[in-house]
Image 1 (tube, rainbow, N blue to C red):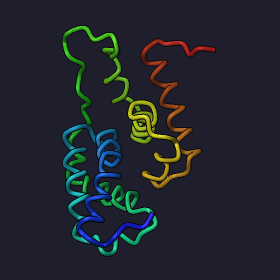
Image 2 (cartoon, helix red, strand yellow):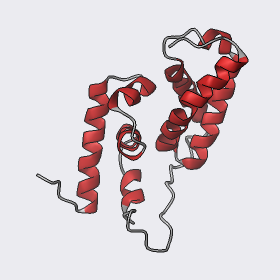
Image 3 (cartoon, rainbow, N blue to C red):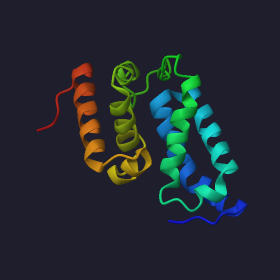
Length: 155
């Protein structure tokens, strides 16, 4: 999809792609850094919107910009928020620690596909990789999560 190189075109791009980018950066860097990186990457995209609007995959370009901008934050470890102290049956208490133990690629793939509900194709387009890479990383992540949480897969 080609976007209009106007302010309204940028607004539409942010409405459409902003949440996916934010989810990807949070999955990769954690909630605090992920939010900051999203803002910086979108600000950079706005500064270069005339060029970016004509690209075949502007969301992928913004994601790569965010990766570059994240270098200033990389010294901080990724800390996923702990579930609240009160019992929440929908959140496994050991999940944040297990997610933190995954490789970055596995964590991003499994969170985008299984937590945020993006398709494998949408995730691949956003990350600039093939769908099979997303499937492989998400599959390995699920296996590692099951192992770490002591869960057996349904046959």
